[in-house]
Length: 297
Image 1 (cartoon, helix red, strand yellow):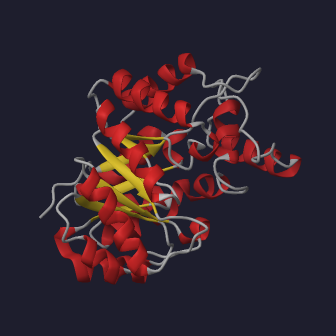
Image 2 (image 1 turned 60 degrees about the vertical axis):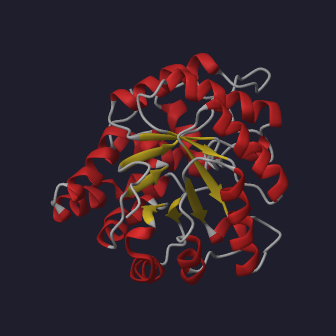
């Protein structure tokens, strides 16, 4: 059995940018991290998809790792997004995260290249052999164009530091197959907020969440209910927050969630191109949902 990097709710944290030059707004970042930890977030994923890692320079990527690890200061685990479609580059990024003291790595499947299952195995084995921290694999075929098959995960689970998978395929049958093949050799986290109860029922340890950016305590509580044996309570909470979770994906992530945080009073700035401003109708819809949930002051 592999001890999970965390149980509960990890926020896939957004990266605040300054409005004038789009540099990282570290003053606001500190406030947001404190708010997350004070409101139940169990771990922080820095420089993931929601953090717009693909538009950060290499220097910014490294700087964000160091800032987050140092500022969190062991209050919760820090998981560094270090995946790439260039294995050599990604390993350099992962090593830097380990050097700075990240507790674990989150490695998305290589995107655009569309490597084979053999390629996926060899890619992840190379990361594993080059680093010394637990690794969470990230399967999100809707964004990468490739699915990490349960059989490949089974083979990867034999490597001691492959700790688990963030499963965002949307296919609950696949999640159950992972559980059947890998058992306790792979920890599973939901990568889709709307599937938290379903993934937990397949043996999941929690969620790596977009919703937690706006509702950290509620997302934590939802997962904790299941962990405490209250499956129906978890499902009821998911039903209660389903409209909000879905609204945060009315345009491609992280455009809506960053706008939502700005609406709530945070100074998160805009997204970097090629992500654009929201369509007016979607902005108004999102604002209405946030208001319904009492999130706009």
